[in-house]
Image 1 (cartoon, each protein chain N blue to C red):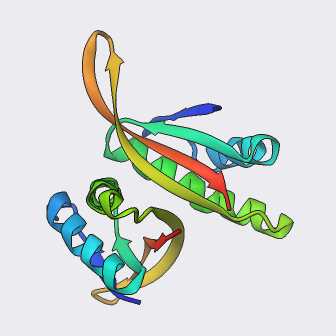
Image 2 (cartoon, rainbow over the protein chains, first blue to last red):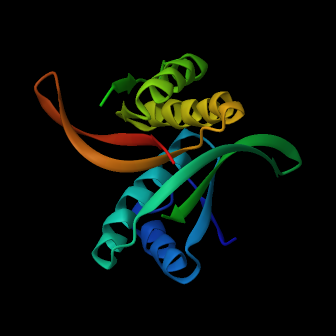
Image 3 (tube, rainbow over the protein chains, first blue to last red):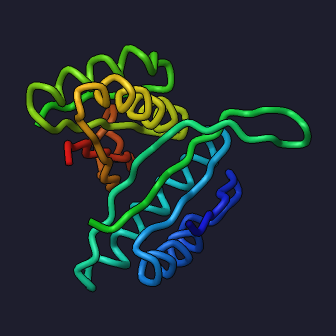
Length: 86
Length: 86
């Protein structure tokens, strides 16, 4: 699955554009976010992407999960957001 | 629809328990969050609630939307998370 890593500094509209493109190609995508600021940008991006996709009658939903990832040798808990077309 | 308002100080496990109960009763629920900290707790609560519900073969997904709400006379943009059983 195509993975988009989102940070607190990510531009939500830019992520939304990328996400909409991946959804159109593959029907699903994965966003990864570490921390509240990053997760905020990721969820905003999904809400914006819904608007990009709805004129094409593409409706997306999100499945949030916890994942453990390694950052600079330290284990951190991140949120994985599976975005899929329904 | 039953609305759960989540703040940055909300306990994610407690919200998850409430959310799981509402989903079992009504098949869907709405979470509202204002700000990155609140949204973080809301998404964590949904990830935890997925674990509470999966032994009963209840699978939930999230639809995020922007909403404008009034807080102490000021208009603020919040995130509405529609949680529904699929």
